[in-house]
Image (cartoon, rainbow, N blue to C red; front, top):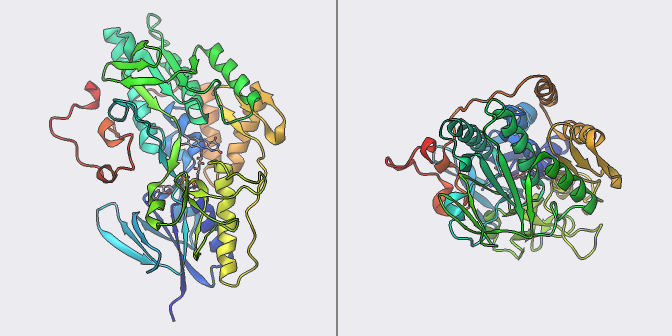
Length: 438
Ligand SMILES: Cc1cc2nc3c(=O)[nH]c(=O)nc-3n(C[C@H](O)[C@H](O)[C@H](O)COP(=O)(O)OP(=O)(O)OC[C@H]3O[C@@H](n4cnc5c(N)ncnc54)[C@H](O)[C@@H]3O)c2cc1C
């Protein structure tokens, strides 16, 4: 007799947690299969620290096989779903197609870069949504400062970040510290970081006190924060702002937000602003065997009736646990429960001993906020805690290692990762300029 099979698509905050929960509560009843393009869970909130050389890249990755020994991991990317036939079609990293049949499906594919119809942005900007982008940015920033040391071109030392949500704010805050340290031996050069947002304040989606604290730190650090401002056009030489100003730059980092992974559209089920609509038990109406959670799902927010839970790691992680328990309940193991969670606060790491945090609504700034923020990340990470703490310690006492590894090229981190034609990256055209020349 074949065992019940639970397929989880996506091993981010929601999918990883669902797999971990199921491997504990349903291991004797079902085979748990986790489909993900990488062999690791990526702890996204610490990615700005990878891009700025504080943390080594592997620190923010947690091995799936090492931490989920009772889960079968399938390396690949889902390309199609057949809800009636109960199958997931996927492609492995070598291009081979495969099909997984399921009795229960958990969709936890997260989100992709949000694009806006601004001329030139798709061609000239890079997003910040995964490891390749963080590695690209780290190399690119080092390269620009090294080239500027010779040609003295101020455009190379000008870095424009669009979007002052937590990603853009942390990238700009850490980035400025990084370039200040890179340029220490070149007193004639100065790094200029700009952080733009159309909203009237930084961190517009968070508590106003977090915004004020973060804005103050950015200003003191010398980041040029422009609220109520956006980009009108991007070119190879720089960007035009909507007020007509031209900024000469070689670096445009696009952090305007995310949109749900387009795979959820393939279900053909109702969406709410691109997210797959589920009921409070995280089940897709009409398909009780299909569950969805995290950024890809529109989950009714029972703590704020009438709205959906925001796209945060905090919700995705907890929804993963609820999805896991409710899948088990659907197999007769325990009782299903609706998802309900009150926000516990937010933390924004601004680098050095600066941070902004409001644990349980208590506003904190400076070193106490930094201690809470880093303590929170250590507690929240499902692995690598000692390694992360060791990197923080080393960063506090040693200069940062500023070398380019050149592993990720500009063409391999397109902003529009969701386009079908870009999903499987082409080899670069032979005449394509090398990054060193871009
Ligand atoms: C740089 C950055 C910093 C952030 N900082 C914070 C923060 O400080 N606090 C906070 O609360 N939130 C933060 N967030 C947001 C938070 O990380 C997301 O809300 C959270 O990751 C959502 O979890 P998820 O499981 O839905 O998606 P993800 O964690 O993105 O995981 C999705 C997984 O699905 C996989 N996948 C995608 N498509 C497919 C496919 N077709 N087939 C198979 N697998 C697929 C992906 O590879 C990935 O492993 C940050 C986000 C970023 C990008």
